[in-house]
Image 1 (cartoon, one colour):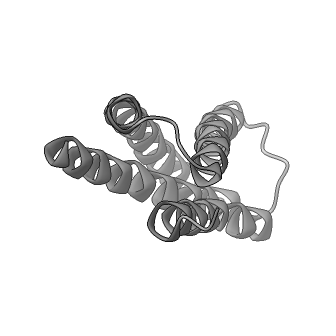
Image 2 (cartoon, rainbow, N blue to C red):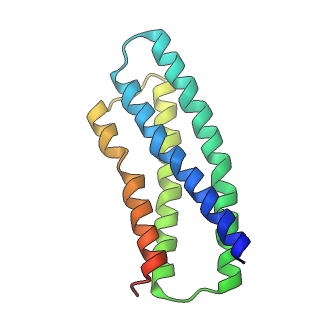
Length: 136
């Protein structure tokens, strides 16, 4: 099970790295006025979102494998699973934001995206605390 846990951690870290960086691209897209730069940023965002989506699946699969191996015990795990579902929702929200940028329908400011960028930090912090400390 330690190998499974190690792979789970690696894929979670990789998935979150994408979730940390993609909204930063959105900040730049919200500020950009030059068409060439916008096109380049959209290409970067598309590729990153696609790659991050690929990383999400093994992260979740290894997590389910751990869950089946260790069982469903403790309130901390229930809370963690809720936060994982919120993280998946955030991931899909990033895809929705990307589509809006691609369609020229963005109505948000770069400041909004700066705040939006903080959500995965809070999620990772809360999930890590739940897993390590197991407060309940």
